[in-house]
Length: 424
Image (tube, rainbow, N blue to C red):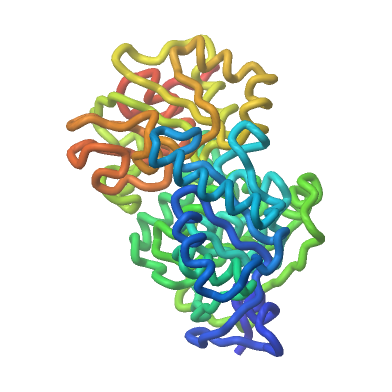
């Protein structure tokens, strides 16, 4: 029996391993280890226990202050100071300070060309699976595993089995990657791919841009997946070249690769969707949402804070005003996206519409700051989770949606389809 994409990448990173099988335990060489201002301090505390004075490779560790940065309080400042001191002591090449080419980690690392096709990447953050959009095996781990990775350059894995997700045709109208992945999660459930690899295939892949693929791979974890991964095609190669990544190592699944099951999605039949509280799987077509008044909208995060997301939101908001009583917070995911949004006039559009525009940060996505919800408040967000209390009070509600749905809802003051605000 042949191997899937993920299994081939793991096999290529196992010493002397020509093949691996689902369920097998392996030690794999790492191309990159990532941590942020929440998870890095714990990993740094564990690092000395591995008997190493230096990280395994100063060029293969990335440290990004993004969750509570710019610092929201004294504790957040201490977390960032710990990471900053470690980065200096270890001479970490890929430490990204606030204001200095900063950004939300999972948007920043691909933008900086730090991940390429065929890489094996771990990160002390669950949404590290984002880099599967580039044809890499990337997955989230705990801080202790991240510490081990920084010390030894290796990590252990139980080789995942796989689900093949076949995408057909091309999306229409305002449908984007967020709608695709929410619909998929709605189909299989939040535990539907537990410790499995979601491997995307089909002619529909070519119809998705890289930003769509990043969004889909990012939310593989919301279906319980170990990772999500896309084939390395011309679109992927062009992105890697544009961002100065290392030469790609493209791995394709064998024709006789074994999958636990196959799921097919016709992109042409999808409509914009929204995930109701309190699970990403609680998905409805947005035109069937009913009358849901809202208090806040958040457009940003590692899921939907890229330039294409900013452009879509600005297109809908241009020349219009956010509804009275609604707070709309726009957060470009990286400094580069922020600057490009400024140069294209998108920030002006947002400000004139009545939005607040932030420096890059995770902020409200994890209930950190800059958008915490009070009891009974509702928010439409382009973030990736809507669990109980995720963005504030346990009796608040988060509705997950695309930038188009979020922008249109901000204008209407309730959840609406973007077509309701489409220009003729």
